Image 1 (cartoon, rainbow over the protein chains, first blue to last red):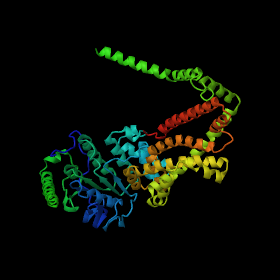
Image 2 (tube, each protein chain N blue to C red):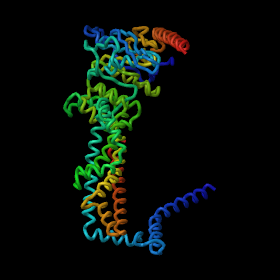
Image 3 (cartoon, helix red, strand yellow):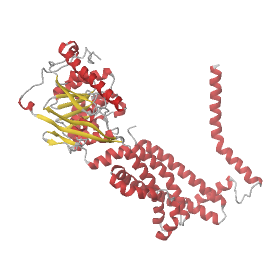
Length: 288
Length: 259
């Protein structure tokens, strides 16, 4: 895909560059020499191999790589859903061992509670954290308005389209006002048009919330369009190959695809991924 | 051509409705004829008319409702206790490996023993008391519901649990909301199976010795050679467990309310 997925009639509304104000330069996520190993029938598999990275407060960082490169595993470790084999993940100075409510997560599938209405799904987090019911529902109503689903507040998830469900999942993660929002290919299961609208929504949303976002995807266009930084991962074992700063001006729009800097960046990414893919493929053949 | 095909198809459909409506009356008619013809011994194999008279007499004497209440209360109480225990332990064994390691081997050994086989020991333990009958029904219901819940809990979408974890869901809410409701479609299947099992075990419990109940009435009638009453009892038992199953199926559909 060489064209931006954004539709021209839906221009991005975005402030200029990410504000590099004083507290913004503080690292909020620190991944230190992280390795994650899985037990497989064929022996141990290194999913993540001594990865170190830092994400600064307020930053939007994408992790791009082929399927099976360990990018989701890395994200799960940041979420506290995956235990490190070696090394650690520090968020706000504290090691992640179990999930913490100030870290929000959006998965590839919405994973909404099917027995709860949209409103109750979003109110789940605040309720779980012991907020009074009235307050939890007020938070939910605010978020429902923000994602534009007011008409569907009392609908059950199975009556919604995939894109709407994913919007609810994002709102549900935001209801706990997370400091960090982790997103694991959140638009990967959506059709191209819905995905474009969702990317647009996410860019707008980012202006309203004050969260650091780590976004896993295999779509380079999506990564460049959304991010301040793109990390490119290699497969088997999962490592970070390159850390690219996306210094394209904001607000960004679909016109970005014509930008020479965008194209250069994308070519860089593609070359890296292609040569890496070839290497991994040859490695596989040698093994076989 | 297609019109002819359609009309012959609808004729077949109409005929099968007619046959379905007439099935039971026709069967009853044949039964009546055979029983009265002298081919079989009418004392051992009474015609439906005799059975109907016996049922009416049973109702008129007031014993029917006493028997019905006795049997139903055993089934309902046994079902409630067995199902509640099965669900609670099923959630625990399904969710916690240690609890499962402790209890599952034991349950898997006890589960295949037919509840009827426990009648002798139950009589030794509880005599002819209601406790013994309750024990048998609970026993039958418990293992079915436990297994269905255990499997259902293990099949709960991992993504739902992870999502709930990320939102800070405390452990009790995780168990009794996310896991329990996630497994509910499986649990309702187990509960429905347990409804018919509770009637099987009721039979064993009342045959073992009782002072009222539908199966007790069947046994007494058998001892007095009242075959009409015996068959009336069987019909009542069949109808009762049929109604219970249908009622439960309707209830189960509503239990999974989000579908």
